[in-house]
Image (cartoon, rainbow, N blue to C red; front, side):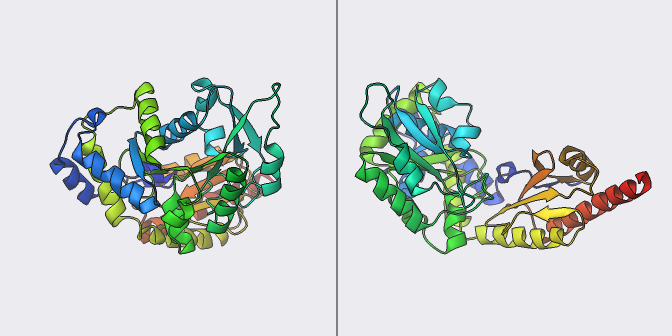
Length: 355
C-alpha cells in the first residue's frame, strides 16, 4: 500500500532533478572552504535573503543553535516565544551547550510576540540579572498554525531590538512558505534580522540541510561554532547540490502545497466530528481537533488512518497537524479526506452502539 504521509514536510524525498545533481556535483573539502557546490549554495542563499554570507549546516536546529551561540555569551539571555521551535523542540541546546538563558514571551495566536512584552522583557543593567542579548522570531510559526509573520511586524521587532542594543535572529525554517503566502520576497522578510536560518529539507524538498545567513563577520564566528558542534561535513557538495535545485526550482511551487492544504481543510471540515482551527490553513499546515462525540483519542484515530495508508501528526490528546508538501498530490488529498471520513464514521457508529 502506498503511504500518504502528512506528518510533516520533513518526510519529503529528493526530486529526480536533485538526485541527478547530487550524482554530478563538483566536490571539495568544505571545512577548508574548498567545496565549490557548497560555496555556490551559500552565496545563492545569502543573495536571496539580502545578507553578506551564508553557512551550510546540517539542520535547522543546528542553524538556530549556531546563530544564538554566535550572538550570545554564556549567561546572556535570549527572548523566545513560549511556542517557539527553539524553546520546545531543540533539546534545550542553547542552554545545555551555550549557557544561554532563555526568557519565554507569550506567543500571540498569530505567532507574534507583543512589542510591549518584548520591551518589558529587556533586563535593566543590574549585576543580579542576565544580560538581554537577543530576540528570536519564527516564520512561518509552526505551533501557531503555520501562520506567516509580516514584513511590517518583523521590521517593528527589528527596530525595537536594535534601538535597545539587541540582535534579532529569525528562525525562518519555512520563510519561503511565508513569502509565497504573502506575495512578498524572502529578502524583505529577512531584512530586519541580523541572522536568519532556513531549511532546505522541508517544503523545498532537499534531503538534508539548512543555511544560516548574516554578515561576513557573523558567519566567520558561526563557522567556528559549527566546527565546535561537529558540523564540518567535508565533501558536502553532494548534499548542497540538492539545495541548489531546491532554490532554483521549488520555491514558487510552494503555492501548490498551500492550495492543497486549503482543499484538504475544506474536505475535512465537511466531516462530522472534525473541528478545524480558525483560519486554518495559513500556509501548508492544517490543524484540527476531534469533537466530543468522537469516542477515540487522536492516537487511536491515527492508528486507524495508518491502516488505511494515511499518516498524520498527533500534536495533542485529540488534536492533529497535517502538512502538505511536494509528494502530496490532488489524489492524495482526496484519499486522506476519505480515510478520515471512513474512520470517523466507524467511530460514530461505535459510539451509537455503545449508547
